[in-house]
Amino acid sequence: MFNKQKHMSKRTFFYLLLICSLPISANTKLDKTLNNQFKTAYFAYQDAIKSNNTDAQFNYAKEAYQLGIKLYGDSDINTANLALILAKQHLNKKQEEQANSLLHKTLEIFENNYGESAAELAEIYILLGQTQYYKERDKAIRYYVKAIGIAEKHEDSNPYFTAQTQLDAGIGLLGRGSRRSNAILTAQKFFSEHFPKNDKRVIEANFFAGKYYLARNKYNTAIKHWQANLPVFNALEGATHPLELSTRAFLINALEKKGKSEEATKHCIAIGSMTPWDDSQEQRPLFRSNPKYPIDYARRGKSGWVKIGFTISDFGTVKNAKVIKSEGGKGFEKSALAALEKWRYAPKFEDGQPIEAYATVQLDFKMN
Image 1 (cartoon, rainbow, N blue to C red):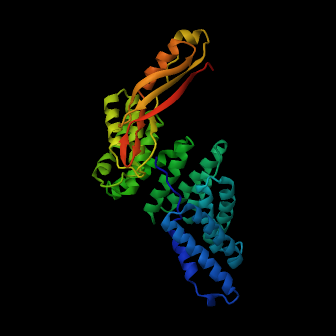
Image 2: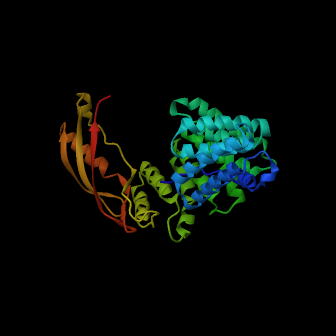
């Protein structure tokens, strides 16, 4: 599935390029050796970005930040930019607490340098929203809404920045189940009016607009937004667009919900014909229908389980499903097999080609 990596913003990247290009004579108190060490670490971080070496990115971002503190001090704007980069690296590693601490330091310095309504703060608020644990839903929502509020103050001078912030914050709000996630739709409208259909911002906005409507069980509208991206995917040559698999997976889910199994199967076949990013990858579940609890068993409070072996075809459908072992009765077995027939997968790939694969699953029937 698509994984949106949190790279540094162009603003931060450009600003730090300026930092690294400053001559030593700009401050005679700077230690030349320390300055050279900092430049070496930071340029090594840049190289790691180009080579997509995530471990090196983290290590050099951390080293550059620690050297930056010695070079510029705790409260310097240069140090804040380095802290922002390191915070993103911590987020990539799911280290929310470390990222949160760095982001609060960055926020304070940015507010002192740019003001509390500066555009530079919007990104920090979005990242702060991402650092909040699930139980901290309300706090996360406040951060995302704060980012949108800042962006809207700059709509006249920089509408593109405003729309991107609305989309990024809206995605975060969607994950938290907030009504304010309709900011995605505002961003989608802007991007669709100002960019061609194959622009990555339009594609991403269409995808998340579909997820927005899916969350509200508006399947037809969700399907329409995902289908808007299909001509772009179909026109591409070479490796599949990173959002195509996710788009077709959600289409399969929505179409099955609408009882359009034949149309859903077409997307399973399309997934099977993709050119994957990884030539060898395991099958992935796309749609799973829960088995129905047999009414007579439910009345009696009866529980059980069914273990099933089955084959996933080269275009993602389930076939040759057979009960391996079960407990509780034939009613559970019948219900489990009926549900499994509706499941859909992204097929297994070997050497870039979809192949059949064997899998097993256990479905549990328990009364709440």
